[in-house]
Image (cartoon, rainbow, N blue to C red; front, side, top):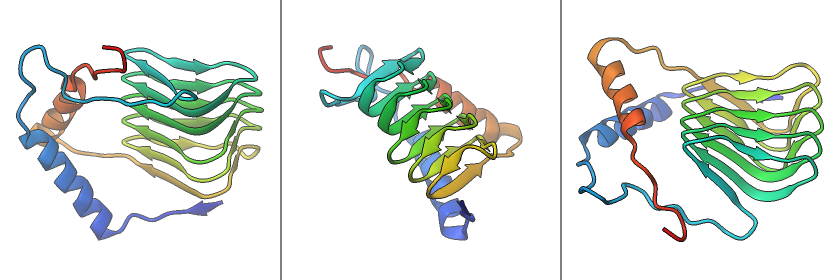
Length: 166
């Protein structure tokens, strides 16, 4: 396991992202502020959890405002939660990266991530029996006052994303 360190350019990029997100205009009434495109082997949940069942094979497992839970025996290429956590259970494999934005990456003993495990705004929980083939990065944000309130408000105000078929 390799641990990644945070350098100034990444910190600066995060601040630029946060300031850009706070400065953008809200979407017009009745319109979505994001559009999601998925492939035939992808799974997506919005405003709830996405559970990848035992034995399933999935390309990308993505939850927006919810958690991704990959059960034992399941194989996914990528697992991403935006505004939630990602849990990889014992016997489950993620062939590429696991990313949680605004949540934790929770690996069970016997879970396998072949590339990176990243939690932005959370922690990576990795017991000894969990395997991560790439970098492990958990970046918690300790902010106070108005900036913290604005960032949390922005994350919570991210509107409904337009999904295929809508």
